[in-house]
Image 1: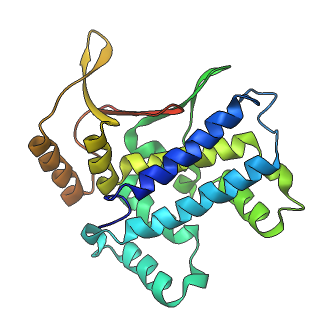
Image 2: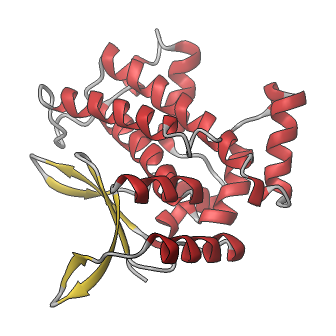
Image 3: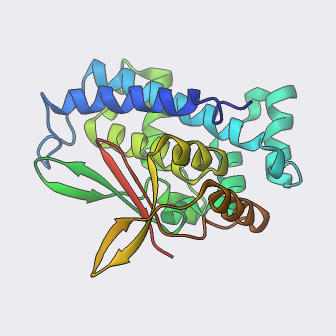
Length: 235
C-alpha cells in the first residue's frame, strides 16, 4: 500500500499546514510581511520542499504510470543514481500527466484573513521549463542557510505549501483517499453557487479510473478545502 493510500502523505501535509496556520496567528500574511523570515520558516521550508521531493518520487511509483518513460527514469535514478535526481525529472513527468503549471485546470486559493483569498499557481514556472522561485530558495537555504536565511520568508513558504497541497489534490491515489475521508467533495452549480453533490463510491471509482486511463483530470466538478487552502475544479 502506497503512502497515499495508507494516509501517511495526507497526515504529514496536514501537520505542515497546521504549523503555518499557527505561525500566521502571530505574523499574518500581508504585503508588508511577505518578506518576513525566521528560523521557524526556515525549518518549514526545508520540511515542505523535502516532502514535495519525496511525493514526486512516490507518484512515479504508481503502477498505472509504469509505462510512462519519464516515470521510469525517476524510478531508475532513485534506485541506481539518486544523486543525479532533481526536480527537472519530476517536471518532465508530471507536467505531462497533471499539467501542474495550470493547477491541472483548477482554481487554487489561500484563504488569508488579512487580505482575503490569494490565487496561487505554485508550479507556474513548469510551463517555461523552469523551477519555481520558492524551489530555488529552498535549494539556497538547504545548502547555505546561514547566508540565505532571508529566502525562508512567508511568501516562499506559503507558495511551497500550496505546491504540496496541489500534489495531494491532483494525484489519482490521493483523490481516492480524500474522497473517502470527506475532504474532497463532488459539487454541482445551483443558482450561481456550488453545492455538495453526493456521488456513490462505485460511480466515483469508475470516473477516477476513466481519468487514469486517459491521463486527464477527474471528470466531475470537485472541491477540496482545508483551513488554509481551497481547490475547485469545474469541468
